[in-house]
Length: 80
Image 1 (spheres, helix red, strand yellow):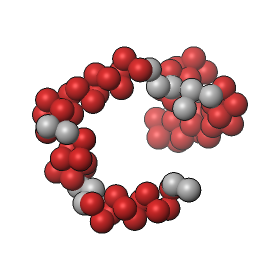
Image 2 (cartoon, one colour):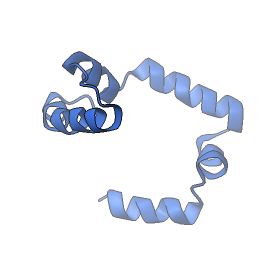
Image 3 (cartoon, rainbow, N blue to C red):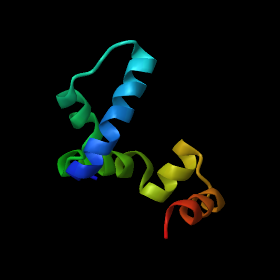
């Protein structure tokens, strides 16, 4: 996810979306922060999910609305 080549390719796309939605131009550093992933943030997110729902599977189904069948369909489309 934090791959510099991927960032460079996506940066103009993300900048255009931010401009379209907000009418404002975001600086590159802000966009890079928004597109990046930090291990500590992921750990905190998973802990919050566990605290609220018990596990990720329950969170995905009850909060996000992704049934097991829908998750399987998404996985078929996105994973090799």
